[in-house]
Image 1 (cartoon, rainbow, N blue to C red):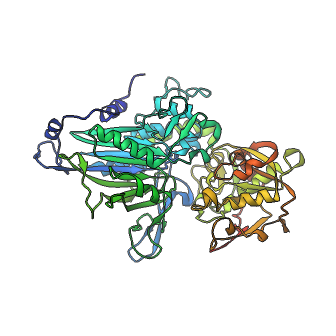
Image 2 (cartoon, rainbow, N blue to C red):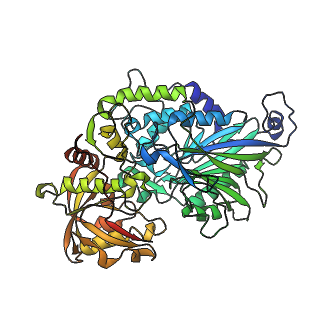
Length: 602
């Protein structure tokens, strides 16, 4: 297919697996750091390369609603402020403004650009988001787990282009051109060939400066995506994969390397401008990325990470003891990270000493700045196509109902969703469910009282409901014994979920105590688990509703795979919208639940 001007420009900038270029010729054409014109002296040994990065955009072309669309900022007096942020119009503008005065600038992402997207992008299989990423001149990204939501074939289509195999082309005379940037899948290989699904690495080049990018998703991706979509693929250890390809790049003469890793950490503070290098008690960062960072080869000069939706710009020593930056820009395009890589044109490496790592900081994608006109036009074009579906009212609420932005084990919106799933499956002919469980990662947003369009305050549109429940998983009802159900509850805080608990949202009538002062499975207080006031009976069989992802053991819940007598009900989205319609009206809007079903001891 013919390349667009943007695609041709990207192809020139990015060369996959390139041989080493003649150093003398390249150095002669390089600009010094911070030069404004091409007439400055060309004798400087080092040049500052600006690395702009973000992660976990999840198709949020429009600013996210409610608390999902804010970042927390520490003020000079120590207080904290909530700042509205995000949206493709502002992200594009922020990146374009940041690039000014930086002749050496590269933009990278760490996965989950698509998947679990609001209706504006999700309704069109995320083609609008890929188009937006092309327009804002993204150079490279790793894949994340959500890039596999619709399977390997769909990911390949997003990379290479072509209209959707079932839904076809969305606009007359227009064929989807695919991503003008490489998706990197270094640790995702095909069972038959043993080769990476897509490209494992790429080399960015500009006037003699060469920086290699290696992209990986988390090794545990199979645990958090539907098994059907990743058949025939293997997911390998992040550290071993990065170290392998860092050697490959090194042999090609590429000594400056950045790893894009869709795995992350948990800083001690949720404020984006928190100093996670602070040495105080309880400070710093924890989670899987800390161990990865400590073992990734010193050949890698910086780690751009994601997955946990947290904001941090930390320094973690590499195996040789030198400090190295590890960054993440929260999620949904609310932040971007600006990292300065000082490139030595003689050694072709990034300057890192025993006391200094590349400087990095997160910046808010502020909604008070001008909007990028091309993104405004893109959003309007796709909104016009989505309008007949997106604008239909499905319910009414009296106030914000916090979901993704709740920052608590149990969220009010999680309660609403689990109640909706129970109601959709409790009738004898519809599964006979006695309780429902919802994985927290499937609650993708808040429900905001303020109108997002012309629908009016308090009105929930189909598009807003879709943003909360975008996966369209089918509901399953299973037989589980009380013992199996208890094991499932314990798996929230043990096994793969011990370090980063995944607390299930529970329907009305199920109550228990979660004691976070204990460790592992003991955090679930056995004697506290009750259904409608009666203690859970280990020998009794219960009918439990959950989405098909959870029923397949997803998110680290293998106990649920043991369920029997499966009944397949409506989609989770249909259950959610039906509940909102049945339980609210303009005169009697739905009020946020108290979220008091799980008692948490800290």
